[in-house]
Amino acid sequence: MNLYNKYLFPHLLDLVMKRKSMMKNRSQVAGRAFGVVLEIGFGSGLNLPFYKKIEKLYALEPSEEILNLARKRAKKFLFPIEYLPVGAENIPLANNTIDSVISSWNLCTIPDPDKAMNEVFRVLKPGGKFFFIEHGRSSQNFPAKLQNIINPVWKRLAGGCHLNRDITDLVVKAGFKIEEINKYPEKYSPLNFIYKGVAIKK
Ligand SMILES: C[S@@+](CC[C@H](N)C(=O)[O-])C[C@H]1O[C@@H](n2cnc3c(N)ncnc32)[C@H](O)[C@@H]1O
Image (cartoon, rainbow, N blue to C red; front, side):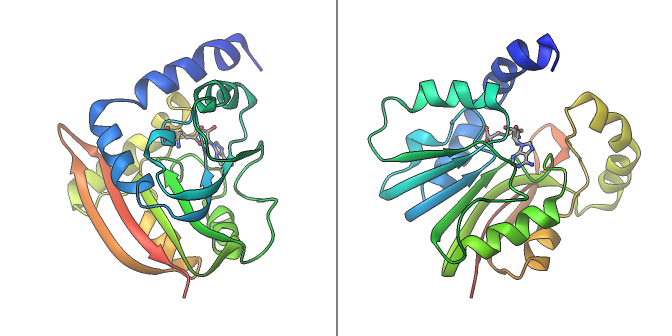
């Protein structure tokens, strides 16, 4: 691992991911988690302040450097946290054991998002919910075409982030039923197309 990834990138990510508009979305997504919670792509732990009535949090994040920032941030929170330093494609939890899964801005980056979503489905209890805020393919023609054109370069510059994944498709293909979905382009940034929603494992 190079010095940039080890020392600079985790702090840069933390800075970029705590913009005001993002924090508002975090409260609307993580704030709805209940019971035993799994957060995939935990990052630097920016959803922590929004967990209200949870029993336990499994914090899954494959980057040890990013997880170190999260560990520092987590010190002041009282609910139990167990760290899972692995990718979401192989979640080390038993079937049907989790009440809520949270994901904020991860499905763009996870190398195998289909496998990760199958794992999320597997570990959730029947009736368990997946709360998410992601960005992906625009539902408007012109921005979607632009996303496809820019994506190969973007992926390289933005640490493997894809602009054009269809998030609804990924969630539904894994077996979920979508209960709520809100799709919109981010203000001043139409290529950053937001998917915010709730899906249930029936
Ligand atoms: C854009 S960041 C979002 C971080 C965090 N979810 C947030 O809201 O601040 C994407 C995160 O996905 C993580 N990630 C990369 N590959 C992953 C994988 N295979 N499974 C789970 N998370 C992964 C990255 O390490 C990074 O923390």
